Image 1: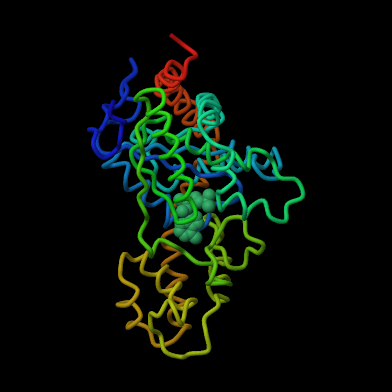
Image 2: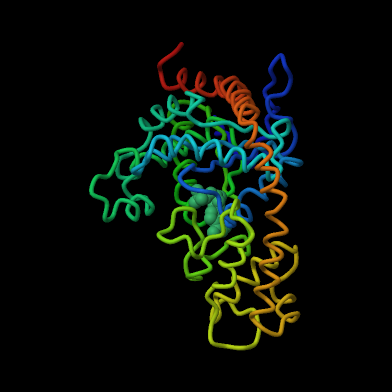
Length: 351
Ligand code: AMP
């Protein structure tokens, strides 16, 4: 028996419904989940959303709002709902095309939870407990939810459910992707060829945006302070203020040196990502920090303005976004039913 692997099996044909293709076929199948735990920020755009939007033209692109994952830590129910709709709207505003990519909300597709349980029966407690993210996130928490321990298994289910071939992951998620591969291989070996084994793809280093107020840590949507985070829906004056206050260093020259001058390097990285240029080449164009910060403000604002305007339009008609999500969930339920059926049959629940 040969386990399914993303490397040595051809791209699976897209499942089709009477209404047409569930995901327009062609290219490698890629999956990304965004967790509705905060407002989307510049790092999400450069590190995840822009690559997703670009990939929809050459890959089978699946994007879901990972609202089940948002329940693994203390949460406000109304906020999870609101952020789920907000993030979906931002994705559409940033150019995700629901006719090209599959976009849906995880909790609207029960196959995620169903496969999660089957994979829990394939994963060891020790394996889950070894996850670095679990150790980091559970430290200093009074009550650790069991789901925080098992969420990498849910993540494996999210991935395997779709016969995903590639998963773009940052360093912090590499260990979880490895677990998904281990669980898939184990299930295939024990119960027969059932899952496609996914592989990780790593975004380029310059896609890692650092916090403007603390350039040694990654910009995040749920940090302690908002001062160093540019949110995608921030108004222009807020963007300007945050960039003006970005931490640099006492030097005077503008040069690209991420090791010794991380704040300056981050500003150059952001500018380079906005302009599609190289940070080293850009450094030569600026004589002062003031000039550089003015250029960063302008470039970020030019990139975010159309997204903000389109967001405002879409937000006036939440019915449209809800219809897109309902249609996406219908298609996702239909396209994943076969994987769950296969897994149930293999593990002994169905004939
Ligand atoms: P998160 O916001 O941590 O749920 O991440 C969602 C996606 O955005 C993942 O693909 C991350 O790798 C990406 N992402 C989040 N923050 C950053 C950042 N500061 N720089 C680059 N990519 C990021």
